[in-house]
Length: 197
Ligand code: IMP
Image 1: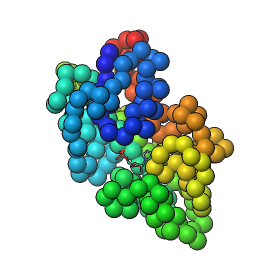
Image 2: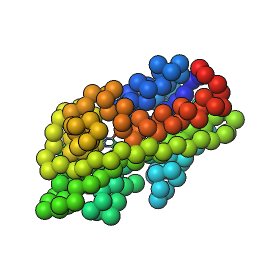
Image 3: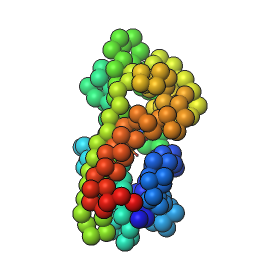
Image 4: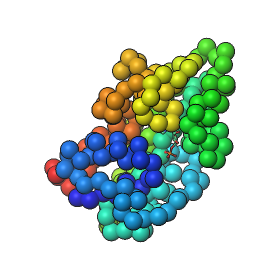
């Protein structure tokens, strides 16, 4: 079964391929499928935005489509940046700028608890939809550690791994991450609908 991953984020596509390809699915990125669309994330929830992205790409192809919407929710910031994680430091800001803004807001803050959240939407060519969710708890450290991953990974310490997401390799991150968990939940649901691949 071919699945188009509705994202232009190469890191996300790499993580999705790592989990789904060994299970027998062919995963291609939106770019590899020749689809050029940039969906405005106007929803106020991760689920809404994941569905917006998946539906926009599903209209343009005959394959299965999956899209995730993810973000970092920091307890001391009342759940911000949340669905605005990508635009937290302004449109087009670099990961380093986002991290700098976050560490600025968290300066002197004792409560460092945070979680990454993903909603994963999947649409079959006949229009049926599945949405799953994944979360991982952690805390925001006060300076970046590690070179891997993307986004807020260098400042997200994951107690389950004993290191930041940026210090983990892809397999380690996928084994506990929000996206990894949402993908595994999706695989569980897909197995019930289409059987083992
Ligand atoms: P979106 O799901 O493409 O809207 O991305 C939301 C933003 O959340 C990304 O641009 C990253 O800054 C952040 N983000 C989402 N997933 C991760 C992750 O696994 N690690 C670090 N940052 C992430």
